Length: 80
Image (cartoon, rainbow, N blue to C red; front, top):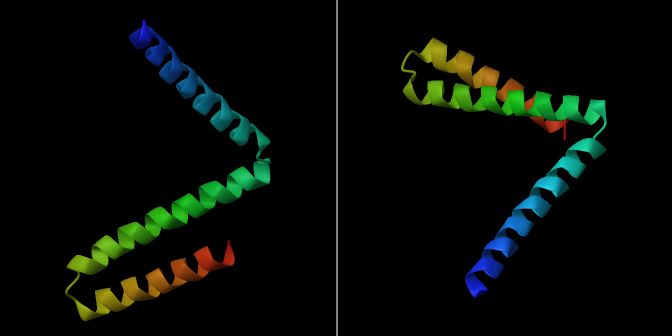
């Protein structure tokens, strides 16, 4: 009996977590959603440039990547 009760509790917790996530998404305005997507895109670009920077050996290429990284950081800071 305790086992069945425990599984119902977990199921209920999962449903509550799902419903609260959906409610939070619904509360965002289209502008907020757009900003979130832009920020996520900038973060992915930053991560990609960091990966390239770790393997780049050409000084000119490294300089270009560092400049791009600084630009992305500035954009991310401006969006906060």
